[in-house]
Length: 135
Image (cartoon, helix red, strand yellow):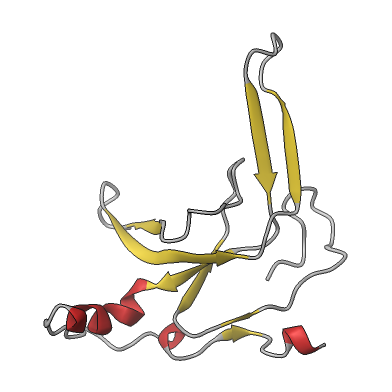
């Protein structure tokens, strides 16, 4: 979880010590629309292949976001004919790590999935502070 604000570079007054379950990957969106809203769950986290920059793969499926820290609504041009909502968050979005669930997905279609390597640690080990909500 972040300790420094990407919005203003200052130390966060209330950094979270969130716990993320196994099979989760977190990602931070640094665009102007960095907060997801209702209906965005299931959106893919696409990752570009290093060796083939024209190709991407799905790393994860959007699961949840803890919320937005800042909202701004204002004119996006001097004539005030166009308006824009800007949302920013210090919190990363949590995605279900697709590779952890490929064997299960295949089994739902009576298929078999065989790993070409070893199972990643993120598939069986969570991250963060599991007592976060109890402090």
